[in-house]
Amino acid sequence: MTSARYDRMQYRPCGRSGLRLPALSLGLWHNFGSVDPYENARAMAVRAFDLGVTHFDLANNYGPEPGTAEETFGRILRADLHGHRDELVISTKAGYRMWPGPYGDGGSRKYLLSSLDASLRRMGVEYVDVFYHHRPDPGTPMEESLLALDQTVRQGKALYVGVSNYDAEQARAAARFLRELRTPFVLHQPKYSMFERKPEHGLLEVLREEGVGCIAFSPLAQGLLTEKYLREIPGDSRAASPHGALRREAITEERRAQLVRLNRVAAARGQSLAQMALTWVLRHEAVTSALIGASRVSQVEENVAALDHPPLSDEELAEIERVLAGEG
Ligand code: NDP
Image: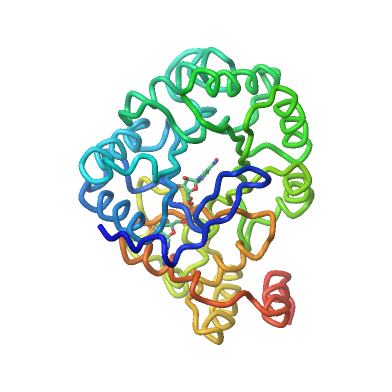
């Protein structure tokens, strides 16, 4: 492992906190489960860290089987990254179904606190850097979920807390409640890409105002915003995988036509489409980090190299808007 890893990566603040994240972070939702080859998972994580990607994002249920991505990451930590714990930002979450019965899903204090304990055991770490509530739970008062997050910090099991998939209003309420508790609430994790722009309708502004960082998940729309689906669905892609969350039906002829045009804009910049999609997400001042996934080392390398390119010009941004709006 090289010690030059910090020379090229950009580190951007999480809102008004002292925590900085790499502009690109690596998520372990796919390709790190018990069904996936360990050596490939290991190679991706180690290469990412070598390139300055200090942040690894997990959740209790990542696999498949649920929980096994945390086990895989624990194994990589012990094999390759031990001695580097203080250089890493490790996050995990709870909020989706994890075990049977009423206490294995949602946002209750009962679920969140026991889930974090189980995550720490699977990864073999004493604490995580960020613990998230994975999604709002209409069946639990939001204050209960947030007080449970606060407790994880007071227990020393999380250094910071975050929420994911909360809408703008919920995010504002969470920020205000946690500020009163003096809980270090530093991150919101929404889905954000050229094909998913909901955060632009209020959420990003709320995060900027409240001083909370934003880490955008699925910035490549699960691989759609790359060159792989321009002509067909390759057999080794997420859309073709039995474990993949990307549905074949998402790749319509209209989508393909848009991708072809976006690819032309990227090519004119000397960038791949994946790289341009990442540059696009990072253009927003509220966005701290783009949270990518990868199925092979070369994707990690290509995506990190997006940071070597200049920001998008006004003309390029306007052309992208025209493509996304389906114009001319
Ligand atoms: P992306 O949109 O980055 O999609 C990643 C996939 O795109 C890869 O697995 C790979 O799929 C393909 N890909 C990546 N780079 C390239 C490239 N350069 N060229 C061609 N194909 C490429 O993100 P994910 O959807 O994986 O989400 C990232 C992370 O976000 C997750 O791991 C998780 O940590 C987090 N997340 C959080 C959620 C939440 O509710 N909070 C929900 C979903 C994700 P292929 O197999 O086709 O090669």
